[in-house]
Structure formats: structure tokens, C-alpha cells
Length: 31
Image 1 (tube, rainbow, N blue to C red):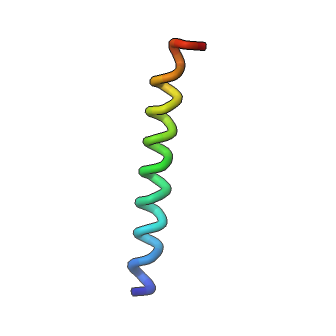
Image 2: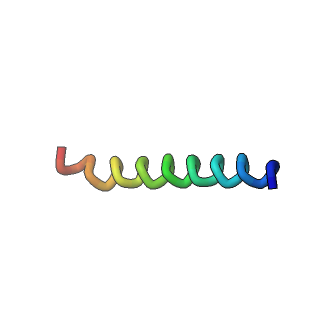
């Protein structure tokens, strides 16, 4: 399980990064 947790953390981080980028792009025209 030790090798499994870093993969989950990295995947969650990548997903949050993508979601944040999508959020910024979706709100950008309003700025």
C-alpha cells in the first residue's frame, strides 16, 4: 500500500490542477 498512496496523491494533485485551470479559463472572459 505504501507505493499506492503517492500515486493517489499525484493523481489527485493533477486532477485539481486541471480543474483549477478549467475554472480559470471558464471565468477568464468575465475579467
